[in-house]
Structure formats: structure tokens, C-alpha cells
Image 1 (cartoon, protein in one colour):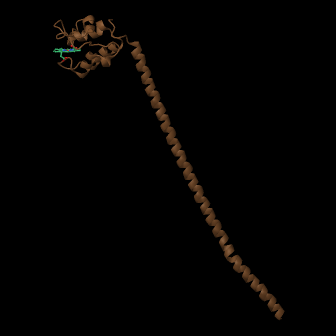
Image 2: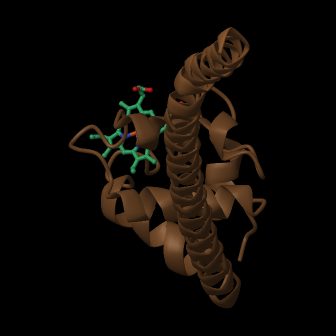
Image 3: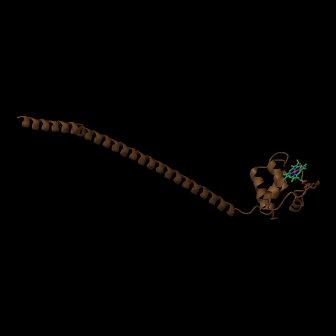
Length: 178
Ligand code: HEC
């Protein structure tokens, strides 16, 4: 009887211990699993968000690069058109482009009364009291260009930009007697 009781007692104890051990373990396992699953899901969601953000950033960058490329192409096309137009237009002529500007705006004062005479190519190139008015090929250094650009000449009012440009182009082309 006591042997039996002892046996049952041990068995009961063993069951109790097992239950005590496996209890929290059995209860803990699913919790841990859930936590792990949740963590994995969060990580996956974060990874997905990161991938999306990266993809979006890359897409934006690609778009920007394409826009820049398009703009560069546009600028190049414009440049090409300008070059074609410049090459197609005839060179500036002294007799038919530049001299008429002088006759209309300058000759009243720069005639035969001494100083710079703007009545002809020869007298223009001979210069004035301050020396050469034109430095062939170098409009920036030519006094006449400096004066018309600054508006000092003619004294009544600045020449239109298009006329100044004609004089500049003619000087930079070497100031030929054409
Ligand atoms: C209303 C009279 C008048 C008109 C018009 C006039 N000028 Fe003059 N210009 C002068 C006088 C006066 C001087 C000398 C004083 C000076 O340098 O400001 C002069 C000087 C100059 C000089 C320096 C000449 C030198 O002796 O070295 C240049 C270059 C010149 N003029 C260019 C022009 C051109 C180009 C025009 C026409 C677009 C023009 N001028 C129209 C009165 C005139």
C-alpha cells in the first residue's frame, strides 16, 4: 500500500514537475513565435517601404536626367540653328552697311572740318586726333566701337543695337574695304 502510494506520489510529482516545466514553455512558444512573426512582418514591411522609396527616388532621378538631356538637346539645336543662320548670311559690307550708318548719324560733325572724317573708308582708317578709330579684327579695342557702345557717339543719342552690331561684326571681320 505504501509502495503503491509512493509510486503514485512520484508519478504525480513527476507529472506536476513536467506540467510546471512544460507549462510556461508550452505557453511561451506560441508567444515567441507570434513575436517573431510580427517582427518578421515589420521587417518585411520596412524592407518593402525602403524598396519603394528607393524605386521612387530612382524614378525621380531618371526623370530629372531625362529632362536635363532634353534641355541639352534643345540648346544644341538652337545653337546649330544660329550657326546655320550666321553662316548663311552674307558678310557685313563697309559700303552698303557701315558707311550709310556714318552718313546718317555722324558725317554732320565728322566731315571735312578736321578731326576724324567718317566720309570714306580711307579717312576713317586714317583715324582722328586720338589716333586710330578702328583696330581691324578687334572691335573691343576700336575707339569708334567703344564710343558708339557707350553712347558717347553720336552725342544726340545711342545708335540702335542692330547698327552697333553691324559695325562690330565688320570690325571683327578685319574691317575690309568691301
Ligand atoms: C554732334 C556732333 C557729332 C556727331 C553727330 C558725332 N560726333 Fe563723334 N565726335 C564729336 C566731337 C566734338 C568729338 C571730339 C570730342 C570727343 O572725343 O568727345 C568726337 C569724337 C569722336 C571720336 C574720337 C575721334 C578722335 O579724334 O580720335 C570718334 C571715334 C567718334 N567721334 C565717332 C563718332 C561716330 C561713329 C558717330 C556717329 C555714329 C559720331 N561720332 C557722331 C562730335 C560728333
